[in-house]
Image 1: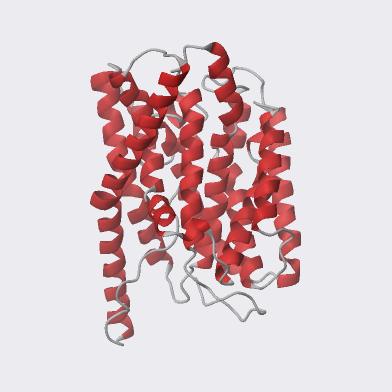
Image 2: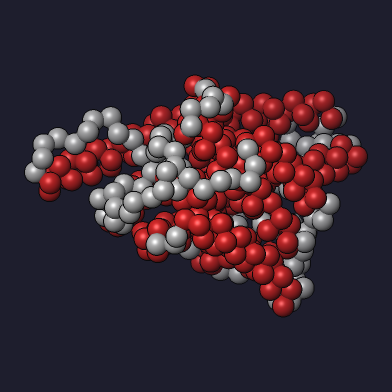
Length: 396
């Protein structure tokens, strides 16, 4: 990862607090999705269907947002003299500890509470974050189900030091053409999935097992979203014009979300329909903040929520599946069901804060401190700058 070559006039690199705040909205979207898809708390069939219609697209779009955001922020915060080894070590320190903690918690809950036996052929690939390469639901969605996305992020992190120098060579005036080409690739992936068998059905969502796995779970199929994030970061950093401001990008995203919600189970709505609007929200938010325009998302509370969002994402499904099972099993009248989901949301936030304070933050700080000391010894120029933190996002 070499130094960035000269670029045209663009915004100064700043720590993007508003993008940190956005992360919590995406994590909340996944929670709301699983509140209807993974648990059934509504006694009223109408209420359950209404909830599903409102939030059935939220999980798909939120994960896509995280993947684009990952490429964007890693590019924005790329260090001029970073090494591949240091970059990969920071990524492992950011993702692996929370993964291991929730892996162990999920394994204990599955065996002791649910009374099921873990299959080593599914659990071991999960632990090492290669499980979503396997076209078998028992493997790809094993143990802590949401960790499938970390297998995608693992591929992204592996590729980033190789991709960034290549994308930096693209002339600024051609960046938008490349970005639109990558968006087009997401549509091609969605259409190519129809060459795969329509049977068997995917056991946890509408559609074909093979098609859903190919479009949604297979890490290489999600790589274009990460690349789009890199390209959008370069677009903002090189001062290229964005087609919409932040408000317009949010409005476009709402429209795309509504359109995608009309076609549940269609491969094209899993990623392709919403990926560009989501990317524009990220780019417009970054441009606004770097130009000094205030945003509600950069406030202290939103930044705190964004900081704990990865831990929130990693533990929320365990709270929904096992916390609600312990607290109030079965289905309930709509007001009670909504109250239980709210309680689960608050409980997940509290648990996420504990994971962030006790696991994620101490380990990332220790690793970053070690790398700074090692870099200072290598350079022979005295102690490294104190207080630096890793600004890049974790996986969802």
